[in-house]
Image (cartoon, rainbow over all chains, first blue to last red; front, side, top):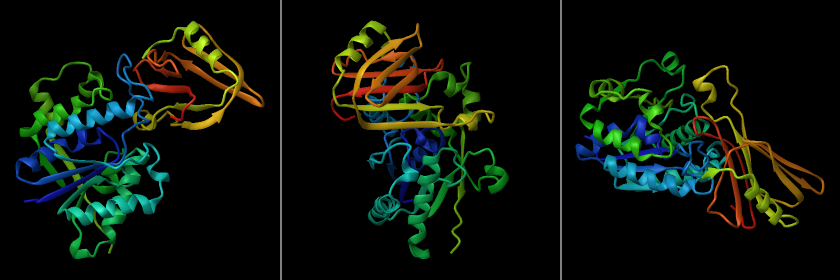
Length: 219
Length: 114
């Protein structure tokens, strides 16, 4: 059983689709979960329909949505690291790694969840995953937590194979759907569920499992 | 945000003439453009808190709207603006949203940094 889990993702809502069911399950099984969110997603394009957010109000709105999503999942330890959305790949890498190193030192997690660098579509996702891999890779082998990566680029299964970890989250779909719905400015119903309303069976099929690739460190 | 009322925007543009202003100017297709449709070419740019000053400017079109601001040595231009923040009286916050509500373009002016 995992004791302490550290989730590091760049944007509020990155937790919702890919990992919220897994996190609810880990919490249910007694793990502590810390979610470090690198930015406030302040450069997001979705402003609600009709738009209720602007470039100026978006960061505060998304912070509240992130907190609501964490409450839905059951996460009590949310860290907002304050980096600028879209700029993770240009950030001072030492500063980025220092903040991740500090979390690893403080929490000594047994499991870290992040994006798979190079297979996660958004430049912030890839840069976040790369920074986490650098920080974990610097630890002595016997002190390294297991790293589970989310990937969703078109070529990810072609190059990485199928995810080696599959988590059945069907018992935690309530938390997962509430996490997604917490991000009101970001997920419109049409994007979330398609044009028609999904029934319970369809929701279970579409959202009932979450897959990860365990990162294999070279040395 | 509210649909742009050109007369209100023009008043605010006039109110900011010949002053040092902080600008946020942005255009984006979104980082997922090519992931969702491989024929798309993802592109984006933004500049935040550069200081500019213009001698005159205007809003035109019948919606979506265009804004042009004339500076001593050049121009600022944005096309595709649809919405503005009606609750802001000291800052001009404008954006253009596509038919899915996603931000495509933004032009913001303020006497204080964003």
